[in-house]
Length: 135
Image 1: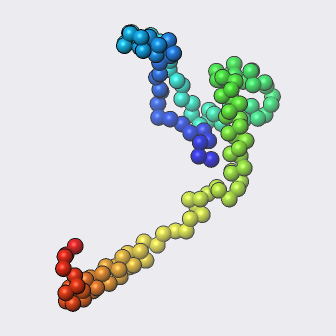
Image 2: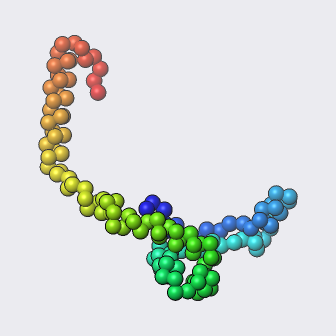
Image 3: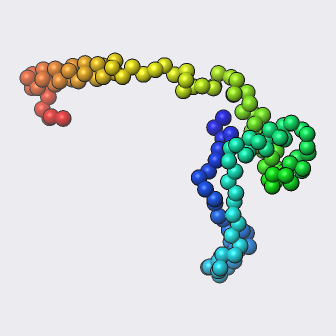
């Protein structure tokens, strides 16, 4: 469910095709009147629209007029919802809750044990003359 209703940080502005062609020919866009703003929809809004499309009470065209979203976008969100719906009840849910709790005390004890072992081996190797460089 990686891409399911993922939201971006803020509005994105891009140039329309006529501005790109003008920039290619003349090197500058000008006043920037042809900038197109791309609306970023929240995951809640996408879910609401997709659920309304799943209900089937209204046509996709009616939903498009109601929510101000293109028909193909509604269809894409509906397909994402259908593909991701199985993961809601499947084994992929609650991965954070299913992970075993981390025992910090045991980890600290293991770190201490390994540090002591490394120090002992370093001392033994240096006495034997096999360790010439210090860490």
